[in-house]
Image (cartoon, rainbow, N blue to C red; front, side, top):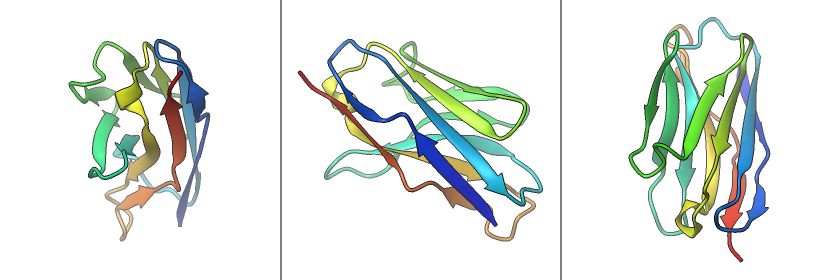
Length: 117
């Protein structure tokens, strides 16, 4: 079973920066995609950034140029968030897709990011 643990959320002023981390643990037979979604109050969960396969990255238009996703050689993915805006306020969820696992899609419990003065 795959477990995902996020860290790094918090309160930051507009224009500030945060780094989110997510560590995957457990029996993982493959990582076919890994990254971040977010959900703001009253809105649906949306993709923020994903690393697909060996290194293809995909970003939401709203964060492209401000956020950078990266992954180390093990099972950790990072989201470097710069020039944060109040509309970036949301719960950020780590996501992992493993096509070799029966469940295939795994989610972390989420970490709150609040951008406010």
